[in-house]
Amino acid sequence: MNTELIIENTPIGNGHPMFIIGEVGLAHDGSLGMAHSYIDAVANTGANAVKFQTHLAEYESSPFEQFRVKVFPQDETRCDYWNRTAFNKKQWHELAAHAREVELIFLSSPFSHEAVDLLETCGMPAWKIASGEVSNLPLLRRLADTGKPILISSGMSSWLELDEAVGTLKSLKASFGMFQCTTSYPCPPETWGLNIIDEIEQRYNCCTGLSDHSGDIYAGIAGMMKGASMLEVHVVFDRAQFGPDVKSSLTFEQLAAQVQGIRQIETAISRPVDKDAIAVATEETRKLFSKSLYAAADLKSGQIVSQDEILIRKPLIGIPAAQLDSTIGKKLIRPIERNHPITLDHFE
Picture 1 (tube, one colour):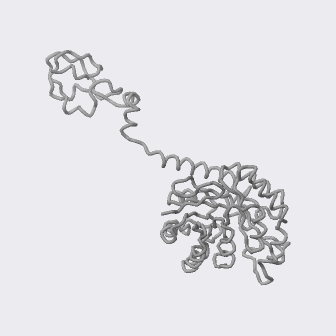
Picture 2 (picture 1 turned 30 degrees about the vertical axis):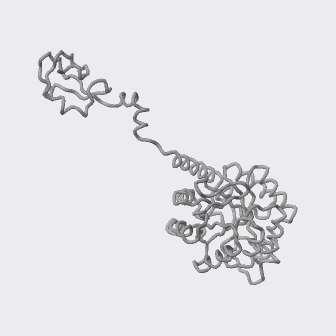
Picture 3 (picture 1 turned 180 degrees about the vertical axis):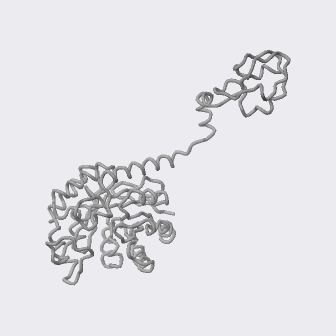
């Protein structure tokens, strides 16, 4: 299967390290300073990319749009929320530049053609599509026109809707990957849907990922073990923060631990060990911890050794304990002092 993607010179899939995205979304709540702080915090975790969302209310919303979770009392409508938390073109450029300065790939999900146009001026290296936009085929076609990789979040979509989206992208020869995603905030283990990671790869022959809303580090690690090449997780500075996605987010301490765990597991998987070679390398240490046969009393030359006259003790100096049965009944050709090891040259 050709399931490799390349985003800003970073290869993804086909045995490459997992591509990890810290999703800020709108956790900055419209504060430009907070958005910049999020970039630095994501960079410090060792993640590969930081992701935002670009909402332009007049081009994506209508007065009929309802809140999923209305947590901000100052916003009467979703349009009010989008407008209050929006950044202008200059600010988006500053955020993108900041991300590159700290060696992060900068991503932001567009929700309109106009948002695509704005983000294109920031030099977007790839596009992440929110699950609600999968059936927005005109947007998918617009993104395919840019020639950049497209990362789809499967979220609320049926297989039929995903088939149509993938068919559209393939017809335009667009490079794409897909995330298994459960639209639940937070997402309990019984709905992680790890089995869908394999199903996506088999169905679409594409790079796969997990967009996780569990609020803990375990789903992402499990996703990596199931073969996901990409991971997206929401992040916040503190779980006591105010906001609709906080319960489904990781703190930066958690994300750093998750990244470290994934990297260590990747190293372990990529470095198979030879059990026999380990035994050879630890031979001297094994002698300290292994047991051999010792004399339980002073034994005379010519004596036939019985089991009562043998002790099993550390370290391994003489005949190994595993050879006890074959040693019993043998005739000594020289004496052994009590508590001394029994060796092969004590016998004929």
